[in-house]
Length: 245
Image (tube, rainbow, N blue to C red; front, side, top):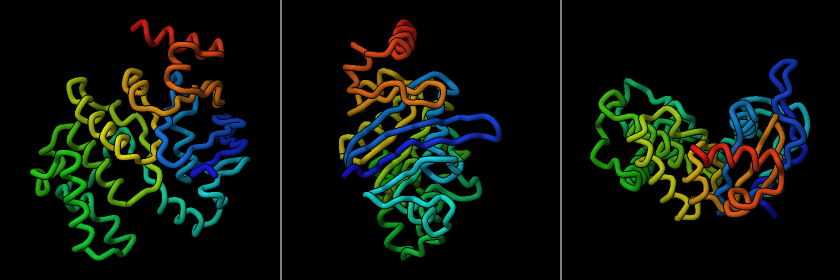
């Protein structure tokens, strides 16, 4: 049974259809990357999965359990099992790094502060920020702030980590420090669904790559299949254009 299963999913912003007939399954430990041009529905799919945009049709299941996006308790359940990191860091500017990472597990999930802080310190060490526990966001580089955002998501203990263009807001020289963190998480077997325009990274870290266009999944395959021998003309056109630059 897949850890995450999406069937015939559709969503819209008002009269504008942004997802239609999306079918996707992800096994535990997989790293699946969504690629495609801007506006193809990649980030929207992540938002729908998290309940930030309500689907019009279709269903989402985690471990076989159907998510009811109209139910507050079902939404809470899915947000206990998935966490998302956006391209904007969304850190609290008036809180230091440790507080930013621990506030949700302590205040929302009501976990013991001492346990959460011990776990958060270990995670911050994993992402190379053990020396920055008492630093505030404006004292950190963009890459460091994004790694804090990743640590914050991990402290929620998600079964699935969603990463939405986590390097898009970074200066080029800061991109690698964030990608290195994601590489380490992938090596540890964390299940991830990634939206990224860093094609070299996608090719390296993904177990599977999914091409999206106009709100639909066009093709899915291994990185080798997608980048070297795509079946669909739309995938071939996109990959050839990307790899030329």
